[in-house]
Length: 328
Image (cartoon, rainbow, N blue to C red; front, side, top):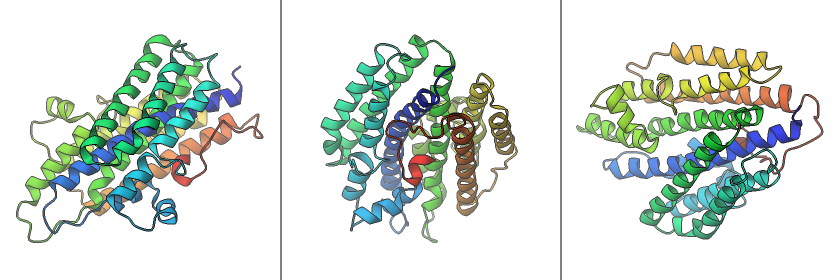
């Protein structure tokens, strides 16, 4: 039987890597949204820390909430456990302790990603053009790591734990990227609001690498209700919340003593399938996404208490983060 410590470190390593990639996607999506907003619309960089769930930590450490400080906080700040640099550093340390259960090349790939972020994080905070290039490189290197997991690792319990961490984190971050829209307030006199919302939703889909799939599977025209339904409910797209929950279910089915976890996941997946997205306003969307994040957090907490800590409650994983966002 795999040690609880090893199992938990595999899970957190996968979450750290997925969080780093999705934080990069969240930043890119916010940048695109800001470029498309009309004069008088209410939205700013500070909304990004709120959506990410790190606004309290940010205000404790930064007196001014401007683009430069927020980018430094989210990308390179080692004191922020949820920054891209911190997540990759945590993943690197966990990978170093897991070499006996991971493909031989995994340490080299993760360490290479860490070195790239260490050397280029400050560049990403200097300009939007440089930031876009650095964040895209992080996403691409992360994709190579996922491909190595899928193609070179035995699909045993260790692999299921990695897939589990990746999909819990991905589902949570998909809801956060969707939540960008609830923070946008258009001026009442905006006569082009509908066209602008379509353009913003296009940017959101693109940030999740889902725009082409949406056009092929749903429609050539992007509507808010259809985009929300696609990213929450469509079982054909691997970044939708429903697809992630299906993957989580399949992981639990291959893990011992996970009946309660299977039940929690199945209930949430059925709830999402029944959700009506037609004529959904920003406030209702925000409230629904908040509830989804809470319920995903409950699955995570149940996993920690009933699986990882059931036999070895006194053992903690390597470099487990302590802030609220990192524990979600």
